[in-house]
Length: 272
Image (cartoon, rainbow, N blue to C red; front, side, top):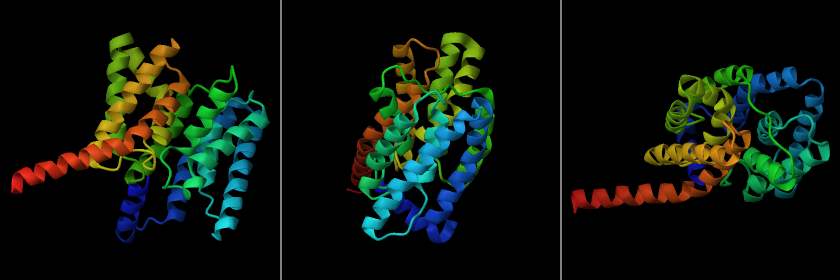
């Protein structure tokens, strides 16, 4: 969202974050999850990763040439997140089509990262599941959850994901897991959702920008994940996080608008 970009621009002098450094930090955070996906799924996953990377970078290069910009490589993060979500059995042409849709209509047509309203990787994964019958997403393992933790810490310390979003969505999912299956259900929820929560739901570009709005956004995303899991008839459906993040992102501007209006009214009542 544009608001997040404005926040980043205002803080850049103080934090030292530039678009290039943000991209580098995200790539570092994604290195371990991408490595685990290669280790768990074998050499076939290399083709998935390379197809997603080449597709996203080619589209970014095409848009940059038209707009007279230099290549930023930020779409590589979209490719890595999407590749981790995709099982190796999916045909490469389907991966290329889904990655194209996600990176073009999720980011590039709006001006690049920071200007769209949804996560490019979530848009790609959603397109893949909706467009090709029978195609599912890879379930996250314990190893994937552990590999996600270092990157999550890096992004949290750098302010590149919102801890308010993560805390609120985790509280909802933990409560749901405890209510359904006790402690084992809670652990299963956290394990299978860790990657998606950090790299899709907590993506600041696709989420709310106001502080209160981030709490509301996280709660909404958590409730949607629980709802989609229930509709799928599965304890944890990998696609539930994708669809929840997409739907919650659509409501993010409305959430921010409501929070700003509420703040303005409170200040008027206080000082008027």
